[in-house]
Length: 276
Length: 271
Image (tube, rainbow over all chains, first blue to last red; front, top):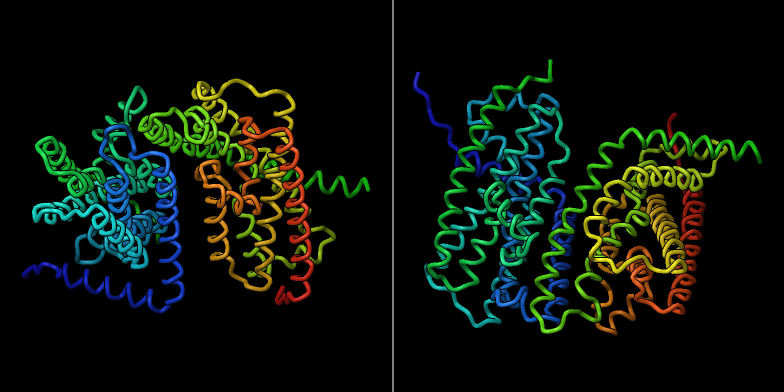
C-alpha cells in the first residue's frame, strides 16, 4: 500500500475558509468582537500618548522616542493578533480535548496530530488588531518620514514569524502539561503574564531588578525576543550590534519548535483517553 | 427580627464556607496578579529617568509605584467578578424564579454573599499583599496620619458599595436585554480607563480631568489611592467622600428599581 502525504495546504485552506464562513454567520458578533479588541488596544495608544506628553522617550538615550516606540507597539499588536488568530483558541481547546477525551478523534485521523491540534480553527476577528498594528506602524513611519530598506522589508516579516514561533512553542509546551494535570485552565492567565514581559523594549530592564528579569526572559523563557527583535529590525537602523541578538532569536525559535514537538509527541504517548 | 438575622447569618456562613474551598487558588492567583507591577516599576523608572525632573505632575517614582500597588487594594474592594454575569445568567436560564418565590430579598442575598466572598479573599490574600507591600516598602513614605487612614477606609467601603450596586444594576438589565456581555465589556473598558486603574488621573490634562470628575469610576480606584497618598487637601477628601456616598446611594436605587421593574416584565416557565 502506498502512503500518500496528506494535503496540508489544502486542509489549512479549508479550515481557514470554514472558520470565516462560521464567523460570518454571526456577523454582528464578529464586528463587535473586532471593535472590542481594537478598543482595548486603542487604550494602550492613549496611555503611551499621555506618557509622551511628559517625556520625549521611554528611557534615557534608548532611542525609543514617540514614533519608534509606536512602531514597537504596532509590532506587539501584530504578533499578539497572529497568536490569537491562529494558535491561542486551538491550544486552549487542546487542553479541553485531553480532559474530555475528544483527542481520541484527532488521533484517529490520518494526519499529523500537532498540525490538526494547532490549526483546528482560526479566529478571524482577532485579525482586527493585526490591521490596527500595521496601521500604527505605517502611521509612525509617515510621521518619521522614514522608508525602510528592501532588506528591512524582508527581515521584518521573517522576524515576525520567528517571534510567533517562539510564542507558539512556549504555549504548546505549557498546554502539553494538560496531559499530566488533566485540566489546565490557567493557560490564558499564564499567557497574559508572559506577554506582559514581552510588551516592553529590552532597554527598560535595567538595575538590580531589571537585569535578572532581562536575563530570565531572554534565556530561560525567551519571550523578550519575540517583539524586540522584529521591532528593532524595523524601527532602529540596522547595525552590527543587532546581529548577535537576531541570530540568537532564530536559534531559539528553531530550538523551541524542536523541543515543543518532542514534548508534544511525548505527551501524546502519556495520554490516556477519558472517553469510553 | 431575630429569625431574619439568623437567616442572613446562615447565608453569610454558607457563602464563607463555599469560598474557603478555593483558598489555595486565591493565594496563588493573588501573587500572580502582582507580576505586572514589576514591569510597571521598570517602565516608570525608565520614563522618569528620561527627563530632567524626578517627577511627573508632582508624582515621583515612589508615588507612582505606591499608586499602582494601592490600586490593587482599591480594586480588591470595587471589582465584583461574576456578579453581573451571574445575575444575567440566572435571568436567562430562569433560575431567578427561586428567589422570587422564596421569602428572601435577592439584592440583600447577593450583598451578604459578596461580603462573605470578599472577607475570605481579604483573609487569604492578606499574606501575598503583605509580602509584596513589604518587599516594595521603599516606595512608600511611611504610614499616613490616622484621620487619612480613616478616610482611606471609608473610601474603600464606598468603592465596594459603588462597585456592587453598579454591577448589580448591569445584571438586572438582563431582564430587558437577556445578554449583557457587550454592555459589560464597554463598562470594563470605561472602568479600566476612567477609574485610574490604568494610570494616575493626575496625568490627564485639566479639561479631561474635569470630565472624569463628573463620573463615578474614579471612586473605585483613583480616589482611595489619592486619599492614602495625601494627594488631596482635607476639604477635597471630605467633598470626595460625600460625592462617593452620593454615587453609592444612586446606584443602590438603580439596582433596586431595575430589579423591581424587571421582575414586573419577567416571565418564568417550567419547574
